[in-house]
Amino acid sequence: MMTDYDKKRAEIAQEITDLVSTTSGPYGTNVHVFTRQGVKMYRDGKKVLEAYQPKDLTGDGIKQLMLSAADRTVRKAGDGSTTTTILLN
Image (tube, rainbow, N blue to C red):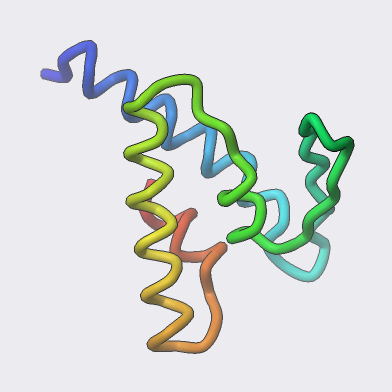
């Protein structure tokens, strides 16, 4: 049985995965990130993840976990940060 906290974490992880997965594959699309400095466009899953602004500390913790896993994948395999983020969910 999932607690409310677990459900919230699962929802945040799914939101991040949906955002990052759009950049995956040969037909992946660009993701537009709206910031105070203007609109930025990314095609790299890790950059999208870095630009993601969570609404609370739980979201920030999940974001940091996913970034850490993506960094390790890049160091070991040379690429695959988007795939790692998708598989974490």
